[in-house]
Structures are given as structure tokens and as C-alpha cells.
Image (tube, rainbow, N blue to C red):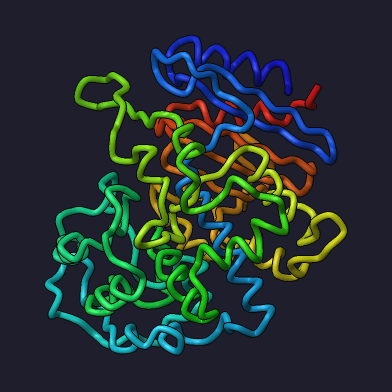
Length: 390
């Protein structure tokens, strides 16, 4: 582990910004892991290399990878309308304006495609209005009344995939297909679509096509009770008090049984070594242990920006001037961390990953404090990860 990186994260744990963190930096066969602190504030259970974490939106690139595998198998076509597989969505219209009434709609200019789900240009997702997310628009009230859980992962939707997609199909799109990048909705729909197309539950597909071949034994939508019990506490700063507070919306027991709706946007648990195996698959161009699981062309499509400059510009605080491939961000300009071409994504519970193919670098940091994403700790971690592991 780069000494400066270890010292910087240890100092943040010592200051109480995080009860603990597990970080991993890899170049080739050289892997350095650093487990710091404890799983709970004031607790005595140390963070371990094997500790499981709620990885939230780091689920997205995993599900996107499964989509590319099924596309290579001709189970689905990225250019086909989603309504071919999900007829519940065939009649969706488009709001005349995002903040308008639900009955003021226009016809879609074209169908939503599977690729639109991967690039988040499917016309439905989190609404970023300036610095406000999901303002009190009629469409936001409608998806909340339907319990679709389009934004925060918890509390979870009670609906199974068929009922979820039926309810979603009763709502209009917010923007025209292909017009605007909108976060989160695409992979929620994609998870339902992949299961429907393959005739298999999403969790089974992921296990058979990715987790078992890659040896990701502790990754899934749920874990046995004894492993789920090892999940760290989840924390976030209470902005009214300025103090970090524990949240009980995602208790370990919730993760000890299969969910009603396996979320393709934010539903997975994983560990540092499990996610390393996934990251290496992409960094190695789709090859694991000498076996090709995904074509090099598919990996290139996933890790190449598909957005226009205008779509990047209007992506707001969630996209942060990055490009977007399939299920993950791709840097398109040099920033304070690296040059362009770095790809990966973060999870709202306080986890993050990127690959830098130019450097052969994999960087993973796992915590369960949401502040990681905006406190400056993640930018510092990413920048210092470029030191050589020792």
C-alpha cells in the first residue's frame, strides 16, 4: 500500500471521519490491502480484508457486464426496443415538461433501446434540478406513491420485478429517449429486462455468469445470516447537527434473505477481493485466468464515453463533468486524479472503485459512511492510489 495513502486514510479514521475502511490497490499481480479501524463507531470488531460491504451503485457496472454477456449470446440486442422484452413499457409517453402534470404528454420520438438503459439516456431517472435532487414534481410524487424507489436504495421497494415493471409502465418518461443523461433508472429497468430475456432470476444469472467463474463467493443480493451479520454500520453526517449519525435503514438482517426486487442499480454486497476479481476482468479485456468471459470489444464499449458534451454538461452534480460508458463513468478530460480514460463508479453507502488502463491500476476503497463521496476523502484516496504499492 502506498505509504502516503495509508497515512492519509489512517489519519481520517483517527479523526473520526470513518470508523474504519478497507482499501485495495493493485498493479498486475501486486496487490496491497489496508484494513483500518472498526466496523462501528465505538465498536471493537476490526475491519478485515474479508469484511462484506453494501456496495450500492457499484452494482451498476456488474449488471452492465452481464448485459454485454447476454448480448454476445444473442439473448438480447442492444439496439432493440426495451418493449420487445418488456411489453409493459410499450405505451409510455413523455412528459411535456419535467415538472408538468402527468396527463400532459407527447409521443416519444423513438423507442427506448437496451443501450439507452446502459448509457442512462432512457429518459427516466433521478431529477437533478440545480443543487436539488428529485424536487416535488408530480412525477416524483407518482413514483414515490407507487413505491418504485427510483433514487435511494432503502427502504426497499416491496414489489417483485413483474409488479415493479408493471407499475413503472403506467408512468410517462421524463425526457425523450436519447436526450438527456438521467441517473439510476436505467439499471433498475435493465435488471428486470435481463431476467425476463434470459428466463432466469437476476441473482442466478449473475452467480452463474460472473460470480462463480470469477470466484466471487461473497458477492450477491444477500448472504447467509452469519456473513450478513458482519456488515458494518452505515453512517452519514446529519446536516442539521453537523455530526455523523448511524442509519438503521439497511440493517444486516435485511441482507440475510433474497430481496423481493433484486436491484440492478444498488442491490449487491461484496468484498475487496471479490470486487478486485471483477475489476481485473475488465482491465484484462474480458479474460479471467486464461478464459475469455467477455469480448474485448464489449469491454471497450463499456469503458468508452457514449455521451455528447451537452449531455455531460447537463448531467449535474451526479455526473460531475465525467463521461458515461455502460453502467459506469469514464473520465474524458484530465482532472486532479489522472489523465482521461479512468473508468469506474462509486456507491452511495461509501464505496468506490476505478480502473486506469493506461497505468494498469485498480483502486478500491470500501467504507460505510456516505461522506466519503463528498468530504474530499475520495479524491485524496484516488490521487494517492497512483503511488506504487509496497
